Structures are given as C-alpha cells and as structure tokens.
Length: 184
Image (cartoon, rainbow, N blue to C red):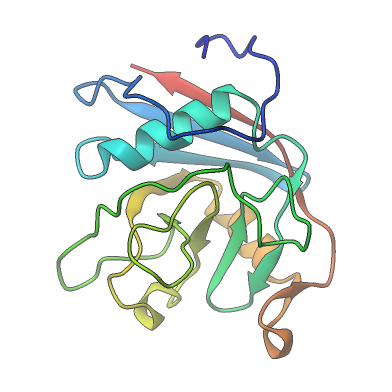
C-alpha cells in the first residue's frame, strides 16, 4: 500500500502481504485513540514478518474506528478486529507465522504483541499492549513486535475500562481512530 495513507480502506485479504518493509529501517506507529495517542516503536529486527503485517494493515486503514474489544485490568488492552461478527473473533482473512520472543522478561510493561487463537502461527490482525505486571502472566507464545515509547499513560487509562470478571468486556467504548506509520 502507499506509504502516504492514501490506500482505500481494506478489512479483508486473501493472503498475507508480501514483505513491504525494509527490516534495516526503523518504524514507529502512532495509534490515535479516543483516549489519546500511543506511540509504539516497532521491532522489525526481532519480528520482521509481524511488523510488516502490522504496517501493511495500518496503511490500508484496517484499524481505523476499531474498538478495544478486550480490556483486562492489570493485564492488557486488545484490539484489531474490524469485522466481527462477535468482537474479537475476526481477522484479516489469513494468519502469519509466530516470531516468538526469548529472555527472562519477554513482555515488559508497554509490549505490543500479536494475539492468537492459542494455536501456533494463528496471529493475523489482533494485538495487545501490556500494562505493568501484565506480561508476567504470559508464556512466550505471542510475538512481541514493539514497545510503547509515548502514551503508556493512555494505555493505563484504557486499561481501567474493562471487566476482569468477564474476561475483558469493555465497560466503556474506546476506539482506535487511526494508526500512522513513520519510517526512518
């Protein structure tokens, strides 16, 4: 898709995108939400396929006006399903391979990671951002592909609008208004 955001909004694809990014370059995503902006530094070196997927979907405006459909206080906020039918069950029409993290703390506060169905290589468009202590609840079965560099306070505010007792049903609608990718 064009880098300038001029692509027509697309929410369904027949296959995963070809490699469109340059893994040697750096990519930043500004996730504009109804609660404020979250700026994420994407890690194309550790997870090139996943960053490429996220960048392509963002440039196709895939995430525009998409709500955070799962918010678990003290854990994470999740979004990335523009199609439904039940919030959190949709995707882009394909899956991508896992690029799993390693190390003692693979999901520190502010980690952007690809959600999946619980099966290997089942990520597509849904992702989550951890809050303080949230990543410690996870096993390394989710691709970590970025970290929040500005706006963790926005993530934390959104995280207050979920119900842990119902596995994350939002208590307030919070939506992504736009995701802008910057390449350097």
